[in-house]
Image 1 (tube, rainbow, N blue to C red):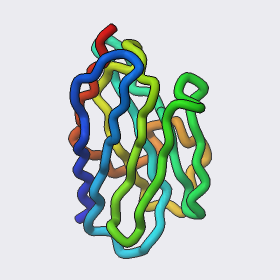
Image 2 (tube, helix red, strand yellow):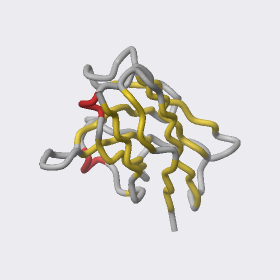
Image 3 (cartoon, rainbow, N blue to C red):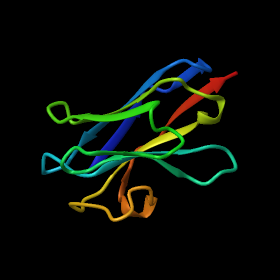
Image 4 (cartoon, one colour):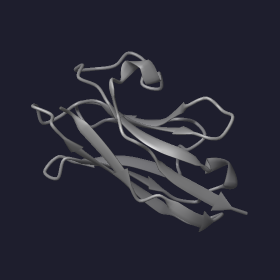
Length: 125
C-alpha cells in the first residue's frame, strides 16, 4: 500500500519561504515520477512541479524560478522549496505519485494514482 504524507505548510508573509515535504512509503522500486499540485478555494487543482524517474524537474510557468522540486531517495522523501512567495500561491498543496515509469502530461492530475492528504500554505500580503 503506497502512502504519501505531506508536511511543512504554514502561514508566511509575501516574500517569505516554505519547504514542503512528502514522505513516501510502500513503493517497491527506488525511483518513480512524482509531482506537486495545488488547489485554491473555488479553483481547479493545478500542477506546480514534477520530477521524472531520472530526477529531471519540470515547473509551471507561474512558479519557475521561485520553487524547486527535489527528492531524497535515501529518505524516500519529495520536497518543494517555495521562495519569494506571493498571495496567489495560497492553496492546499498535494504530492502525487504514479506507478507508471513515465507520464505524458506531468500537470495532468489523472496521470497520478497516489495522492497525499494535502498541506495548507497561506501567504499574506
